[in-house]
Image 1 (cartoon, helix red, strand yellow):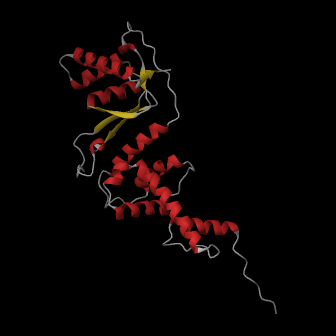
Image 2 (spheres, helix red, strand yellow):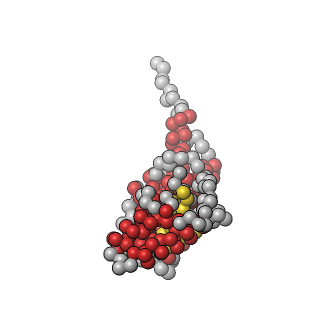
Image 3 (cartoon, one colour):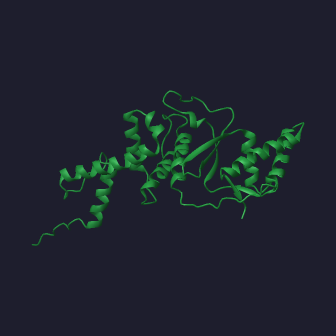
Length: 254
């Protein structure tokens, strides 16, 4: 009488078991055919690499999070999220998606998603592979007559919290009554910086990106504000637009 021998685990099955264990060793046993000493090395290398990338991408979030909570969050990310890219610098974007869609943030700071997005933007802009053509502006030309958009390297954003001011000793407990508007951009020295906008300058940016000239945008804003002297709004818009062109925040519509 012959005895059927169990088939050896195929290579693909071993790979999947290996990956499941690396991601979440508490819930998934290691493959039997790999020495435990080597498995421990793999576990530590993988975790330390992922944790290091996330900590470097979100330095403020890391500072204000306790050791226990931080490492629990990184492990939760590794076990729950399925990354869609092999690029290391995209790990931060994947972590952001995890925070937005997969993590239960009930016990996290109420601003965690806004803060993480703000920190991710700095990394995303720093590695964005985009070149822009600086505008050649005729000094005699009125910049209010031009059609302008924000550069691909300039992102106007609105947050419910003053994310640029959050620190371990400055953690908001409730959302602001009005949004915090930031214009985050990569300057000509390839450094990422920001300008804090007020609601009026943020509205000006939005209207320019909708296709209005500076003049039309300023007139629209003056009407919305019911400003008694629209020329003040026009002069303010001209000053802002001139500055944004010089900083290469605004470029001509192609």
